[in-house]
Image 1 (spheres, helix red, strand yellow):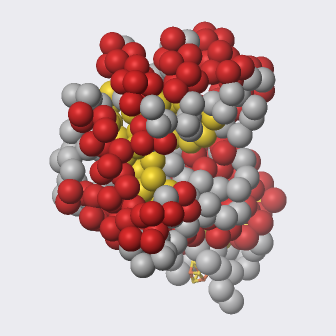
Image 2: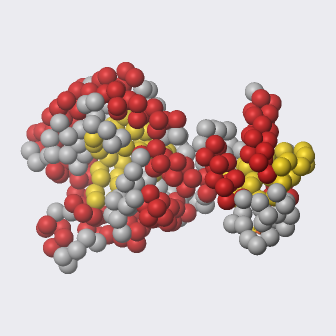
Image 3: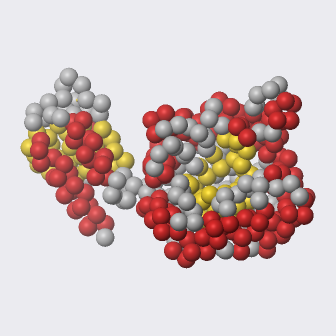
Length: 355
Ligand code: SF4
């Protein structure tokens, strides 16, 4: 996969663009000014593999809370701000690492200049984030009364030009829609038009079931074309799930090694144990494992031994029992009700050997 080269920026300690690995980010859904809840959620996101956290800053208490949040976590923090330049200044002064802010929505050019001056002074990047649902009436009218990829790109470029007029180039861009083909076209056009790093996402993608599919298809298709430097999966649900899904998308394209990979068969008429239940328990327990190992859970001797042998650890089902494998070797035959514990005992052994 040939990745499109973009300009390198840095959000706190995390590089984005250039040849840097693709970064996973998410957004809290707590009230930012509730520092205890926000920090607790950020810690869960970090544990799931989130590398950059965005928080909503709709009011001054939220902007001021950034100082305390920054004291509790060292993962880079992005403040999501609309319209009010004072919130941006306050967030910058409280130590935020980046802003999501569209300068064209601030209005007064003096206020924009002030925000840019403060951001420049502290090397704080700004993400221009255009969503299909919030294009201006004029832009919609210009492009035939509906959001188009061209309208989204033109809108983003107009915000970019405002920053460039101030010699500001620490920029990242997103162009999100809930419509996957529209999102793909917008990012493809933008990727040709600029070298700024791109933040990928399908917005308002829905609840976990539909959101995972739309995000995997949309973000995955762009990444497969070499487009994208950081990703955020948006789900109506627990943001921790967004991070898990984002990491799975990167893992499935070979763009990241993070945590375990579960290989499990779909089962068929040859399966003679409750493999669906076993695979679900294994998947759940693997959430606590961070090591990049491959675990195979297979239903019978047709494909089971091959996959289990190729994995770090695995089981190949038989009649009410299974063969346990570790590092390509058969360890022993295990009764069905002991398979999960035997499998995790082998995973523990691998962990101890590695340490
Ligand atoms: Fe069926 Fe065996 Fe293949 Fe699983 S591994 S799908 S049980 S043939």
